[in-house]
Length: 377
Image (cartoon, rainbow, N blue to C red):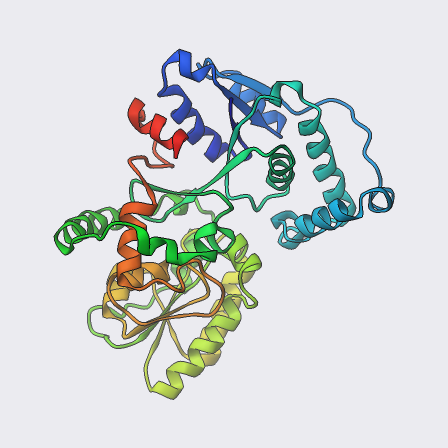
């Protein structure tokens, strides 16, 4: 049996599209698992033949101290998981509350007889408090794991056996790309034309952002086509898990670093606010920094800014990887899974490592063969 662990509504919709693409006989080999009642309720309305496991009901949860005394090694693992979860790090959820959620989900998973035959679990990025106990459950039961993440390239999905981004097996062993087949320049050039056309569409994550008017008010500079040879700094969403887990600095420090570099190199610094930023205080801080350090803030197209820039500075955004596509020097201030990519590795990553054939945020049906390949990946 194969489990789909559905933590967010976005991934739940995507996973359901995968499941619904399969014949009924194959859907019966799938178990949909959700830690949240709202998602379980939504799943119950979907026309799927897969089984569904709700995580609910009463269960006794030991205190952290009692658990530590009985199982110190596992306690250490759980404590680390909690302290690196987005809920604890970014949302400021108290440790005791995180402990209760983690232990509740872990014990529920361990005690579900329906999960005894699981051989594989497909999860999201693995960074959330609901996913970390699922990872530990899989490790305890020797269940194969696959973590999925948006690839930032059209019609592609990142799938990895150990995690997403800097926690992935790819980040630990980028040399695995060297074993993949070479990609011809002709094939890559044809794909680049398709990629550029897709990237000029409005970003989906920016739709219905209540801070869009404030971003437009702050990011009103126009630098193209008159300026070239500048330093380009694309900012990240202030609550982006990658910013907190895989970097020791935030947007403000990146701007200060970029400003110093621009002064030393006698270049302009051009900053682009992430279109999905929803924290007004973050936006106002950026505007204040602009007043102090005199850099440009623009909403112009990211690809055009990359092409016109002399180099790119990023914390660990995938925009840095996009800049590598155009052979731009990239300075990475945090930890990024692509930091050891050269041009050949980048092409192999895009065309061979990433799963091709499905768009996570789309609503279109997925071909049966593609769904089957996704599950077997």
